[in-house]
Structure formats: structure tokens, C-alpha cells
Amino acid sequence: YNVTFTSLFFFSGVQSDVTFTFENLCSDTLWRASNPSIGDLEPDLPRDTYEIFNMDDHYSGSIWVRTGCSTNASNYFSCETGDCGNGIMECAGLNPSFPITQLNFVVNNPIVSYEVSLKHGQNMLVRIKPNGGTLVDGSGPCPMVDCNKELSSVCPLDLIAGNKNDQYVGCNSPCDGYKDPKYCCNGNGCQPDEISVKYKGLCPFAHTYPGDNQPPIYQCKGADSYDITFCPAL
Image (cartoon, rainbow, N blue to C red):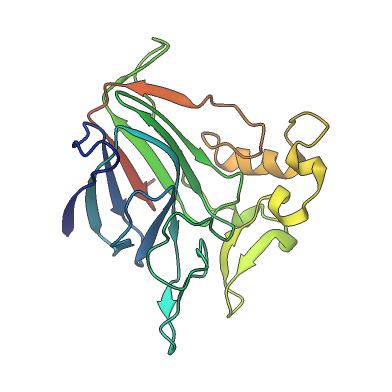
């Protein structure tokens, strides 16, 4: 089992008290990515690897993983999902190709807001688990959020993402797939649609459409760390 300690020093140059851990329990290597970048100079996360990151005291952005990555004969690096389009292993804060399971964080030490979002589809099963801490609103301990079921069973055929061998690698969101205001909360308020309701049925703790606020985006204070697990055990 591989354990890596990585200290990230950002704007302040001072080590933060906010610690993220990344654990890959999937059967294959994953490649981490983020926007803005959290310093993904060595983004590969082999199976059974556990990495510890000291985050910046102030960060607002998204983290995701890329799957099915490889380098071709021309030394161009690309991935089946979450690809950053720059041909190199480091994502460098670029936007990904969808679908991705998106992990959104706002770090304002000592408060961390966190969510699992399917607003850009799903390419990975994931869990965010605060260790300790209490919610800022005083309603209780900081809860775990996850999406630990594949959307493949409810994903419309025209939203399925496949690789070059036509194997299933993810499910797109209806907004990204159809570009229809009906699914993108443009002009008609933000109500769940028939597809996002099915996604929510499988992943009730994730946000599944642009206006989804249930559960709320939790604000946690005082957690020792935040465990981010890919392919978590049921």
C-alpha cells in the first residue's frame, strides 16, 4: 500500500492546517486534476494509493479525476474522461472534457465548504468524509457526502460516454448533453427534470442539476482532515 505525503505551499507560503487525503480504491490508476490547480505536478494516483495534501488556507475550485489515460507514440497524453486537452500529464488548471464527477471546495481556513456534484455528469464513484468538525450553522457534526452508485442503469443512451472501444466510461448531464434550457435552468427557474431525478435517486447526497441545493452545501469548521475516496467501499 502506497502512502505519499505532499505539502502544498500556495499564496501565503505558510503550511495550512487544512488537510485533504486522496485514496484510490479503484482497480486502475487515476489522474487527479483541479481548476484552479492545487499543484498537480504528479497527478497519477495508482490503485491502493493514499496521498496526504496540505491545502492552501484559501482555495475555491473543483477537483476531479481523469480515467483511462495514456501517452501515444507522439508523446501526447490524453484520457478517456476528464481530459484537459493540453497533451501533458499536468492539467495546469484547464477545464476538463465532460463527463466528470466534480468535487467542489471553498477553503477559507478554518471553514471548508464541500459538495459532490453531478452537474457535469459522472465518471467516478467518490466520497468526501470530514474527520471531526461541526457545521457552521451549529446543526451538528460535519456529514459525509458521496455518490457511490453508477448512473449507467438510468443514463439515457444518448448521454452515455464511451471510449474508442465503445465501452461505457461515464454518463453526461442532460444540460451538457442536450444544451437545452429545459435542463440548464435558463429562464424557467431551477427545477429538477426527469433525468436529474433519476440521478438523485441513485446518489441522494450529490447535486444533480444546476439549481440543486439539497442537501445544502455544507460548511464545516474544525475538521482534522477531509478524506476523498475514489471507488469507496459500500
